Length: 97
Image (cartoon, rainbow, N blue to C red; front, side, top):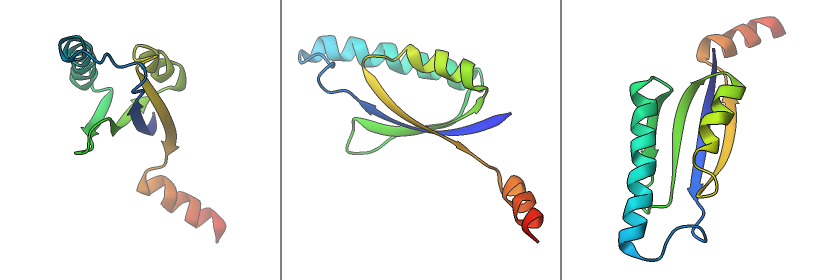
């Protein structure tokens, strides 16, 4: 199963200015993220202290991950990187010698 580092950033132009509306939007997103964590889609998730940006570590296939990310469009922009485990990096190193 592939592993991904997801860097996310809120699109401030899409976030409601009204605090109550913003709270509703943020609560909806937090609830979706909690569902993903319970389903073991994200093995780690966090927001930077300054706010508006953060990261997640996820496992799965490309299509499923893409579908999950679409739930947050247009409020969140994503940068997604597939990563290798230490064992995979070790195998790569062995293949070079």
